[in-house]
Length: 346
Image (cartoon, rainbow, N blue to C red; front, top):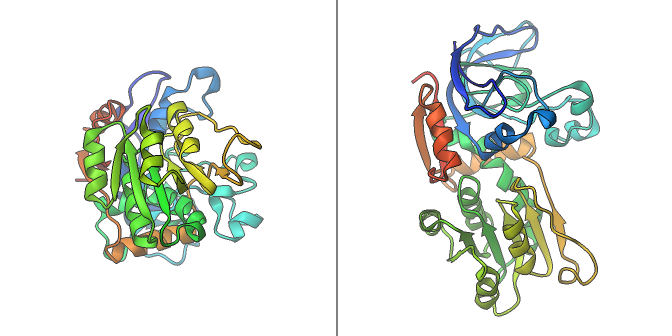
């Protein structure tokens, strides 16, 4: 089969031919219908050799949907031909967090060498994907694979982040979304669907700010040195009850802290590597700062339910498997408006 692999540190990913995978006991083989392209992959391919945590070559793609092509011995709960989405943050399935469906916070994954597809295990940007356990599959139930596949990360991650702050997003409150690309433009829709909050979107790109308005942002602000003052002005000097930074770079993290209201939640989702200092007098009183990771299996089911109800959709650009390196080039250059999706078997 064809697959997109990161093969050499510092080099671009390549489309190569690799052996077809076969499901062992308890495993499920998917014929991939769509796979997502994510900034996390750019980050992985930017790590130097001395810090690289995975074995190479690595088949990329941690967002995947497909149809069940074959079942390993002992598998139940899915049938050949089922259309399913893949829950990416695989865990052990038995620890206290996994028992709650929070495999994204599995307590034993590192010790057991369990890795998500595309982030250690072979990923979804290939004609076939081997899934370790049927519990990591969620039925699509009629959803379009192209628009559904980004929801497994670009939908699930902001949903998990926002859900934690719902008690603060009451009528009259404000939510700020910093970075309105792949995850941010979904976050805006989720905030509009789940809360009565006023949504202010920040980005450096005029195209992404236009997309933010199209998907429901009440106000848009250019994310520059004057952004914090602009948000303060829009909120009568009070700031925002919840701030979601989908970039995580030094300038955006500083802005996130500067626009937080008293008792606000600041959630740093982006992996830009910056940190926000916390201490008495550093931020307004009782501001909480968190850095969540992905979401639970139950939350993925909820996100797909919102999509089925028409409450959230993803702006996508599609590419063939042979064009997958181009999709990463465009993503790295900031030219993807929304989410890039690879169609390995189209």
